[in-house]
View 1: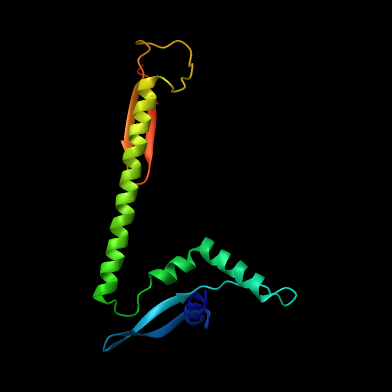
View 2: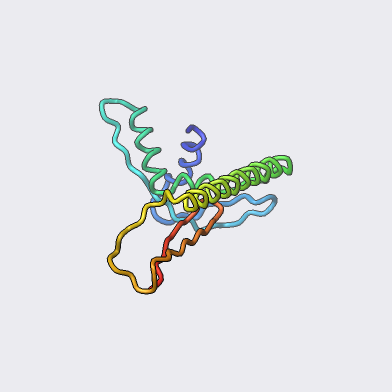
Length: 147
């Protein structure tokens, strides 16, 4: 949390729009940046509670995500490889979970454990069409009744 607080100090120094130098290798650029602020009261001298409240407010407003995404310095190739490996592992775990959930849903539908909703008389028979659509993170199951 100290690193987040240090990064925030540059964002919250001035209110409104500020022009702040941006160090990009050997080049100095001027960057127009809008600053946003979060105010937290310290009650009864309890700084830990105030810092916790500030962190929750930062997470909910998206400032923490914005700070973490900001890249000001060079990332070494070894760090890039580690980040790429972690992203690949996360994606593979997500795809494996999606496959497992799809298999479970298909087995559940085939065994007849799915709940049916009585919508009254149906035209065109009582054949329900089940569509399974998978994404990398979720499985969406929808049942459609042909009209």
